[in-house]
Length: 473
Image (cartoon, rainbow, N blue to C red):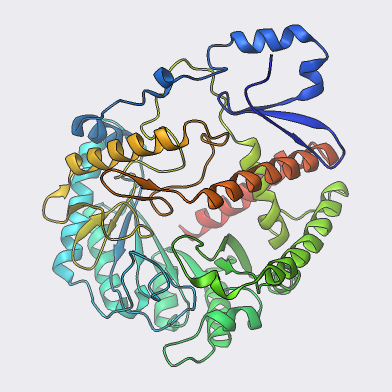
């Protein structure tokens, strides 16, 4: 009997099997050593899923989607206080290099609209208390560059604090250039979780992150980040974007030399529906990969020697591969109870992104073609249900035989769909599958070299981040 999954091998030569329907990894030798184990596996209800399990033809009602949102959604209200930005980053989704995205413009949200958005969020949170009493409201400020409208952010914050009786968290992601003393004092006093976009070492940052006049921005941003660090008393969270010209060895050195910065997220330039990567060749990727491999080997040695710092850049680069590989949820159920059957898409309403005009969207990364409500009427549950049902109907039929269907990271951002068809390029899917099994091989290789490291990294990193956030609050 052939196992319902795919095999992979670690660096030591050990063989494993990923069982896609059960979403678990087992040692191939452990299975083959006892033939009866195969038979026992095949008898587990969730071993091999059918169309009935995935409920391919299930149509969710607006009432069911509303109940899901009330229980598990409303996690964040992201407010686009302005579409204006004082930077012109090469990889920006609003740069004209991405399909179905707006271009740079100069619209600002008015105070009436933003207060209505906060009011509506408050109403939804209050309505959802009986379903989820532990939920903490979160408001994040988005742009453009949100600090272009710093005065509006101050008004919003004061209004929201009063509305929610101070039981609310505030976050902001900023390019850091406008963080003067008044802004920094405000962030510290209001206990904001601030994330500053810094693309690592100076050359890498300045290559892509220029101001509207084309001037480099690294020096002013790093100086302002240091000021924030000195005033808030905890390291500054940063968000890093890389492309094939990024040298990961230099990135590690940069964060090691600037330990007042903690890399919270590391993301590739968005590769979907863009012309950004047209400038690169195979040689470009090979050079990038060679540097990445050097850092990977350094990381592997540090794990073996128990010297890997959970907050180090290389731990953030490679450690998350390991934790995500071991955090899969085993599924032996007879029925798929997830609203979204395949991929990593969320249910609309999990997060609410409100643009300068007061319209609600699934999130800030999704194109502006899918509106799910507005500040006047709130969430349109019928529209959310339509999006979910159309997505499921198209994606389930397209992806039901894919070996990583239960761990695919794609969502509305990277899957184009219209009323009757879905466009998922075969080559990008092939690469995603290859990358997934490469990550599994790497993660289990790390586990073999030091089984205790994964747990230590997970606990120490997230404990450290949580401690910083508590101190900020």
